Length: 184
Image (cartoon, rainbow, N blue to C red):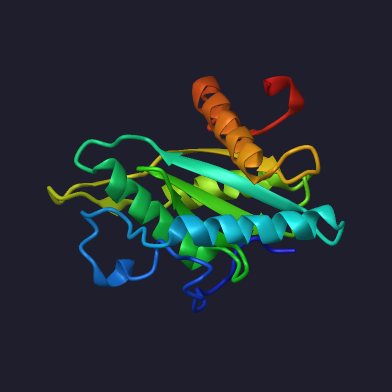
């Protein structure tokens, strides 16, 4: 199973609520938010129900771009979200989470596959240089933490777990981390 498409496909506006319109906007501004919180909550709740029914796994990842000279946190988040939107599977969902974080909901991902998926997200964000306002270029570095949807945690707890894993990965220098119960 491939976690990334060969060619970008059109995205449904409900699947990527915060990234819509980026190609038509000045990337200096923040990602549009709109009704994103409601859309994200509904989507995550639906994926949790599917995961709990045993029909599929679901991985929730929180991604935090590192600060970069010449690029605001919002610009780094916008660029990273665009890269994810153009490369993830059509049924994955990407949301703005907080000021400078991105949340990815990836159904049909098993716990055993989650570390590879996180590594691919990290590599996707950093592999292509981004042009900075002064004309130079640099690479966006991100930290990615994820948690699997499971019966013992509601949606908010799953997000908290993914954030905790992201912090753990960032502090360890590894930049990727899957939540485990010993992180409580």
